[in-house]
Length: 243
Length: 243
DNA sequence: AGGTTTCGTTACGGAGGTAAAACGCCCCAT
DNA sequence: ATGGGGCGTTTTACCTCCGTAACGAAACCT
Image 1 (cartoon, rainbow over the protein chains, first blue to last red):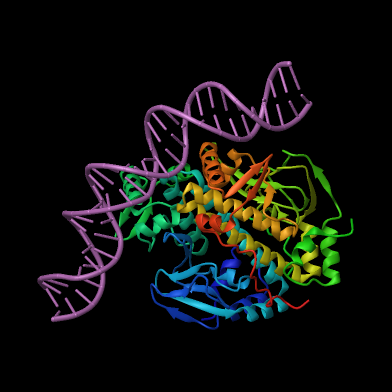
Image 2 (cartoon, each protein chain N blue to C red; image 1 turned 180 degrees about the vertical axis):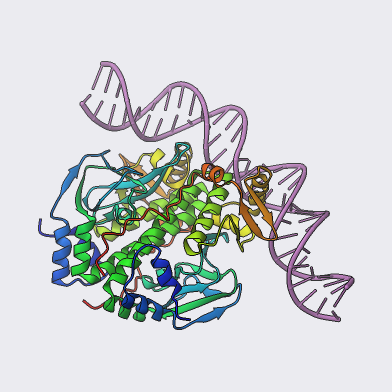
């Protein structure tokens, strides 16, 4: 239990000092297991905790007053989740586990201690939230005007690129753990239409499916259809304060 | 020219020390005036600068390969813009001035110096980008499934709430500085439909218009229609490292 | 004044939503 | 193992909301 998956993730982008790595690993000392379907945070309820997601899958969403659900983001191991609760008294979104997961909870005041002792970590958190901001603007552009096909294509590509960021062993297939209705709630379509698009993409030889796993057969074509470009690479973090 | 509008903005939420205020004011020493319509950053081109927007209006957008434009956000005096360029080598979005504006540019390495000397500023920047992240998720929810009416209503409310955040003298009317086509590109509609919605809302007594200014007559009804709640208040920043 | 931009309005067509039902599949209880 | 039961998927028919294209009116520079 030595490693910190959060530290591992950050080290994809920059070098950490031993002290920083140790401080980040300390965030993952407490571990809480949750089962698939468990509510981790409920929108509009007070929260004080945030989490490193150590294993599993979690999604965030909001329910609009008309009852429709908008899935905001799917998180994977190594992601830093619930971070809006650092800023807001009440959680702006709900968090639910898509599969059995391991969370490492810590409260805002541990965060304070961490930031006081390791100023550079604050800059890292700024970088992470900028990356997430840009990812969200890409989703925004996708929801604004793109066709159903484009929405589904870019959604799938975004998922696989983020999985690859965490786990080098990912090739071109993954287990989504989302129903077609949930995909619809993520990209702003009904399950009926998501189904049409997926089956069409399958017929066109762009993807294939087998027992829950989706395989992307022609990513270049999907990128074309989805107006997608991977933004998770090509970072410039040289300006970060020296270790 | 003593004040710093960026510092003023931050002080709406928390107390700064004199040293911090001075350091932030230093970011605004260089000022560059740009005219309406001027391109400040172009998507996919290398950038090294970011800006405090001291006066005027700026919008960010992307152009999708099919030619459609998605306006991501409109910025006002006191906003911190182009901040994605701290993380990415190439700007993920374009920035253009909606009115004659005053920008205070500084490069990533000044930012580094600032963060090294004032660790708490890094935490502040984290907070700002979390706030923006949440605002974007609200827009995302609005674009996902909401009707044209809802999109326009929540867009107008978001604008006025952000104006109020900066300027207490704003009451219930503002000069949008956007054409109906631009509103459409922000909320994912055509100008034809934006026009239908605006005229309908005017007929319903929810808004009124006079020489470019829009007045929100019934904000409660607009909030209902747009599924909108103001997220710019009710922050919890007590956990921030002590000054 | 003259041209350009923005606003306003129309008719039509299409992409995607709605509703409903059948089908497959996994899981669990008997 | 086996037979439901429930969830997810697939399919159909119909309909609505919004986009497209086009044009005239108004507003706005210069």
